Length: 218
Ligand code: E4P
Picture 1 (tube, rainbow, N blue to C red):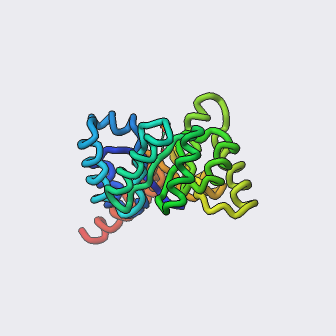
Picture 2: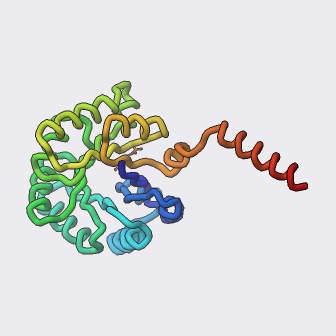
Picture 3: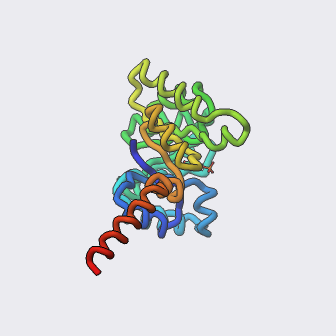
């Protein structure tokens, strides 16, 4: 399972990269705005800065919602760095744009997926990744993991090459359950990744080992 970090914060991306388990980055317009990044030149410079840190795919989302606009923006984003994956919303013109980029060999991430039918459409259009938002489904009392399961079955039935990128991950159990189901990728905050490595018995055990070592060597 690939681990992507879901942020535009350079310090957190650097920290995750140094942990040695990072496979990529996802961003979205809200995450860019959170870092105070605005204006075309600044946005592009920020994507280049992210690409310079991470070894792996970096999703950069288009703002346009019409086909021509998405193609223009996506081509400009893809030209920034070979790591850039053009992130396209699941709307009708977005499906057409996915097909265009797929035919050109440019990687895409279809975002805002909330149903298996949307994932199927994106896969048929040749998306590299589909991003089902599990946390946002949980927020409205709908099990986001059921959606991951359903998409896994459909993609396996027909050998779609599109990867399931479990998005809107909020906590470590989301990651573990996505791994059990067989999501190809998860994207989440650094805190959810770091929570995976923690266990109180590890801390207690290590403290005892070090105390015994200190006693024996005093
Ligand atoms: C990923 O590509 C999405 O932008 C992201 O995971 C959304 O997460 P949120 O629901 O926590 O905003």
